[in-house]
Every structure is written in structure tokens, then in C-alpha cells.
Length: 471
Image (tube, rainbow, N blue to C red; front, top):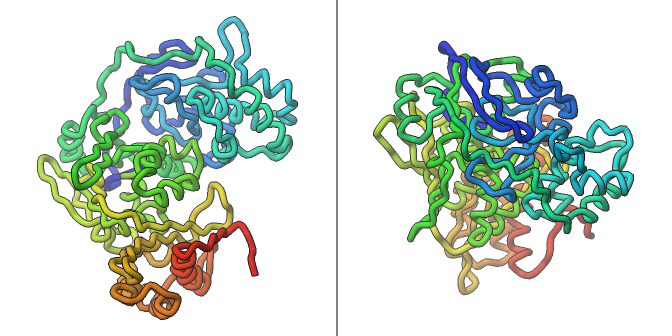
């Protein structure tokens, strides 16, 4: 994801050092817009990493990435097609050619795939194996989740899941323990090591594009064929990747990945964490940053409505100066955010509060899809009355937007069906949605209204599932 103001300026080539299948690779004068997929295939001849969709959806290009400070179990499956080479700086990479040992011993996942006949045409198999190997290294056994970002249209998933189950109890092979903690890293001015260096560099290069996970910028390159002339890479800024529990709130650095956010909020806000299971795929969640999802300004981004409903604030930094604003004040209009030149999101602050949050994502597919409507409804009820309400939606306007008229119709009233039905009538005061390829305006309004009803039904013990049709 990107998070900053983009523009055009002179770029610079970069020097990069990382591990590839256990061997140190040092590259000089690297084009910062070159994708990992292209480099692996064209320069290293590692053709097991496939180009399928070239937009991070199909998983055929999946590789395994391990950070220098992580243990084996922290390895992640990521999409090479929309990852840029400088993002490999100081990390360890495994392609399908490096999953087996140097002596040719197969990984337990590979053996299981063979034994359970879990491959037909084989095009998708390298990416599937890498996703399962990364999960095996982490000890993850939720294989349906792990494989949500890997498409297979020949084999079918039943034998693949059988193979994953068969191998999950096997030990992680020793040859995969290649944590890159002794690499000689050459500094690059456009890849700062911390937020202070970033603030100084960005003040001097205010029109550069800041890249954290590149899950959006990668599509500029592969689909729009548009290249930023100057990029600042933030993957080395470890202080932007911190999560700090404080007395009254939780601080989440803007470079924290979506999967890290998912784990961090699970205890306090299970509705938030549960929705993030359907935020793209495992590969995307491992690289996309929370700050990027906010700063992109998309009206259908999944996290901003939730953060608005939680009353979250943004800490913005420009040089040595900082300011804190409510996230709902960050979005001015479509394509325009409350950011000055040279200013970036340093962190997100979520105040501690009672958990009344419900989050519902409606999309055409259950896994790996863009929201038609996302509703975040934070309603606190006490003694039969609505004590407080903060409600926000994505996909209902040109920006993620709070439903203030709906909130007013709820607060102070009895928490009953009549109150809900009365509040449903004022949605049109807050929103005039557009009709597009994902949904009509009428559908969006009705879905949003029904989300409020769903909150009430669930608060009275009725289970509601969008995957089931009930009379």
C-alpha cells in the first residue's frame, strides 16, 4: 500500500542485499520499480514462480518471505508479482526451487501433495505449495484461510486440503532456518531506517510516493503501466511497525501489516479482527499496511469505516512537527485527504472503550473481494436504551463516512425494533450512494439499513449469516 502524496521527480537506483534460497544476493543499481517476479524469472531463471493474474489475486507467484528479526514461524507467503525488489532488503526469500534441501530432499508438504494427487496441470501448484510451506513454518492449520489467495481450477481443493492435513504434524525442515541477521546492508537514502530519517527525507522530497507494502503501487506498474518517478521505501522503518498498548488507547504504527492488526485487536474488538479475515488474502495481509489502507483514500477501503466507528485518531508528521486528528476528518472528498506536502501518517490511535462494535462486509465473493458496502456499527446499549452510537460505512459515498443522522435517531431511545426501523428511514439523510459495477445505489441503501437491523437481531440472540437464505 502507499501512504503519502505522489508526484514526479528524479528517481534513483538502489543497492539491495538479501538471501535467496539460502544464498546471499547483493544487487547494485536496481531499478526500484522492478517487481520481484520479473527479476526472479528473467535474471535468475526461477521459472517455478508463475505469472498468472499479475495483480496479487491468483497466488501463482507466491514466494516465502522471512524478516531478519523473526523466527521460522513468522515466515509469510507473499505475492512476488506486485512486490518491488527493494522490499527484499535484509530479508530471506524462498521460491519453490528452494523449498527442498540442497541434497534434493522434499519438504513434507511436497511429499504430501504427491501422495494425495493434489496437482493436475501444475501451474498453480508452486504457489500453493509455498503458501502451505509458509503456514507450516508458522504452525498455522487453518488451511482454507491459508489457501484463499491461491486459485486452482484443475485439481479442486479437496486433495490439496488432504495433503495439508497430512503434513501439518511434520517438523519444519532444518534447511529452511535461514534468518538473515548477518547481512551487510548498504544504506539507501530513499529507504530510511526509522521515522526520523523518513521525516527528513520526505521534507526534502515531498512529491515522492511512499511505499510500505506496494499492494496498490504494484498495480500501478502491472496494470496501469504508470511508474512513480521517485519512491521512498518504508519497510526498513521498524519504529513504524510497532503496536503499543497504553493506559487509555492502543498505538498502531502506520507500517503495521494487516495480519498484525488482526492479531492485535482480536481480544478487544473481535468484530474488527473477524472482518480482517476477509481483507484480501493471506499474501496481501502479510504485506499491506494499515497506514496505506487509510492514506490511499479509497471510499471502499475496509479499515477506515471501522476506525471511524471506534473514534480513532491519526498522528500525522511533517518534519519535526506532529498533529493529531480524528480519522473521519482525514477524508475531505474523493481523491483528497487532509495531508500536507511532506506529511505522512505516523500512527493510528484507537481509544479503549466497551466493545459494541459489529462489522459487516458485503461483496460479490466471500473471499478475496472488494466491498460493495462495509458497515461498522459501534452501538452501546444499557438498561434497554442506546447509550452511545458511532456508525460508519464504506462504499456509500465518495469517502468513508460517518452516519450522524442515523446515530442521532438511535441515541437515547429504547433499543427495540421500532427504534431500528425509525433509524432506517434516515439513512438517506447521510448517504446518496452511487451505482457502479459492484452494486446499485438502491441496493447499497437497503444493505446498509439491514446491517442496522442485523445488529439488533444479533443483540437479541438471533444468528444471522449472509451465507444462508432464511425465510
